[in-house]
Image (tube, rainbow, N blue to C red; front, side):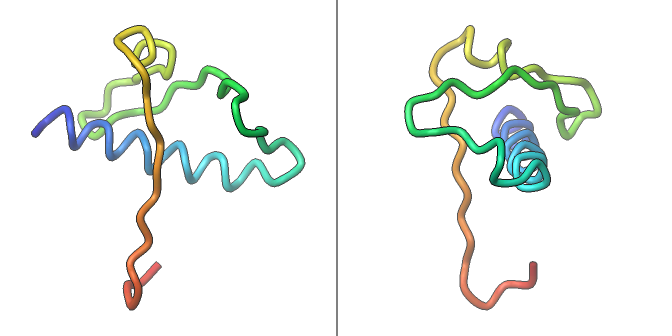
Length: 69
């Protein structure tokens, strides 16, 4: 559960960061994401490279209808 919350926090922060970067630097399908570090829900930094060393990482977003953004 704790890892799940940590990963959710990292994913949310990653998506926010990617959205702020803009479409000019968007990745094509199949390209590797650049390494980055974000603080997890526990406040400790987590690097993408540390997560991918353990196995594949999937970043997704779920936007539900009628939810505040």
